[in-house]
Figure 1 (cartoon, rainbow, N blue to C red):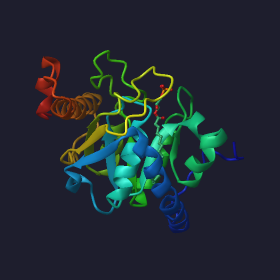
Figure 2: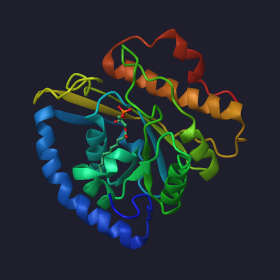
Figure 3: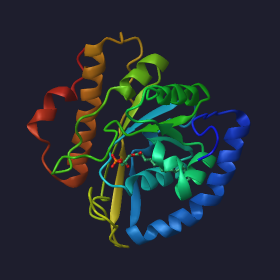
Figure 4: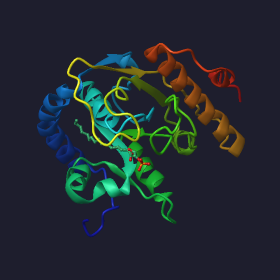
Length: 244
Ligand SMILES: CCCCCCCCCCCCCCCC(=O)OC[C@@H](O)COP(=O)(O)O
């Protein structure tokens, strides 16, 4: 680990450096990822083309971050993932830092620093990618669940809309708990970008944070249902409307 592993900055020089590296890394990563199949974007016009963006993404496989990263990069956005701090050490740590990703210190007194980094990234006009579950879904049927309120807090503080992102197809390759991925070159991963949810001007009460969070979860669940062809469980339906 470097001396100051959690000092993340987004200066114009950092941006240039990280983009330069991404341009080198993306093509071989795309080639390697073909052994897991290909991905298809749905409604990529919902990805803000420039300026700050918050993407809330469904997490159902250890493989999905790279599909989402490649999709965003191919759509003109350099993703800044919030990722658990152990991913910033060792072999993966070096590129994670060099690519300007954002470490999350779990269960520590400094856990909230991670949102400060995210805020800094937004102030610099970056595209911040967050897994609101904080971990892979534990739901046996892979429905999104237990979303944490960080996305809503960040959006309320910054006034930046939330883009809900669902996907389907990575759990066939590597479901939660699997030790290694299956190679399925014919596999298709569909990534669906939902309409941005604008919550600017809403008061940051505990209740509102929970309502917004449940809404984002329900919208992602609805898109997972559509992509997977499974019926949406009843428990999500009331939060599909955002009523504050
Ligand atoms: C392609 C060109 C642009 C490249 C951009 C950089 C791509 C980096 C993608 C990697 C981002 C990794 C994000 C991981 C998020 C995370 O940390 O989730 C935790 C779960 O996994 C597992 O958690 P758990 O099982 O609870 O330990």
